[in-house]
Length: 346
Ligand code: F1P
Image (cartoon, rainbow, N blue to C red; front, side):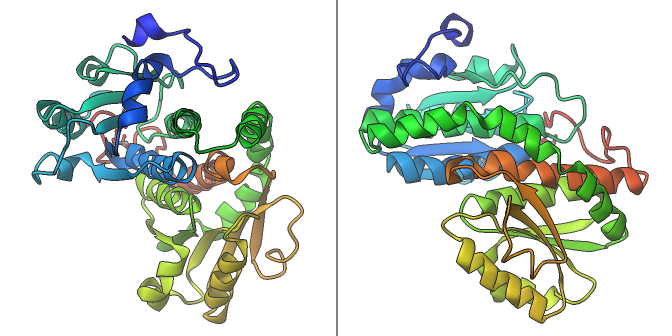
């Protein structure tokens, strides 16, 4: 199905291809729920998918760790759509979660990177991300590619369900075309990130905060730092900080905050103030030209302005670069981190 569908263009103004997923538009129209199953970085992409699909298509989404889902006897209905996300296409827990959902009669769609891997063969249909081979163990470009597909699914489902005005959809699709050049600009933050990495490379802990889709981005930023730099890091929804992690903040604690100009901007500013009041060090990812956060933060990393729907695609890049530079400065092998396997097949 994947290959036979490649090249089909869904009528999102003729601009968007979603591989074999377009075969399932009727299922999508009639589904009461989407369940996303994945592990690790792919699970974080799934969370972004939840926020965007619920926001745009008003379709309930649950995001499950495949390793829990497969063992916990979950409720699965025949008209559920299960989306399995996997870079390698070989993750054992994700495969077992698919088998379980299939037994219950759900429709299984896949988002995978490795063409010809096992998971696409287990699904009814899906889309390949075609992000190219991930040379390193830790998923990076596969993550942004997965998020791109999920963003498109959110737009697609919104169009099918009629939950988004044509003018909003058109403006999002127009902006979508500028994302590659905005990503280039986000990559140009490299120089300031080298300085930040130099200052924080010897940290033993780090907190990542974000709201809305900035929250899964924060989780992913923390995972990358753990995976390749071996620094203990936690990602939190910014407002959850006061329910525990705030106790950890002192002058030694770097706090990386996604503070771009979007619907949660004002609330994030108050979270930054809470950290500053406890002498934490703020590294803020801000929208180009921001002055308010700049006055409060120890460091700012400016990324270009874009609709909130595209925030995860842009804000992820500096976080990946921070982990990369810190890891290199600490002498870690960024491609082959200790104890990690590219495909977790057991
Ligand atoms: C999931 C994953 C990766 C992580 C590492 C171990 O793999 O947790 O996110 O970076 O490589 O496996 P996948 O199902 O997306 O291939």
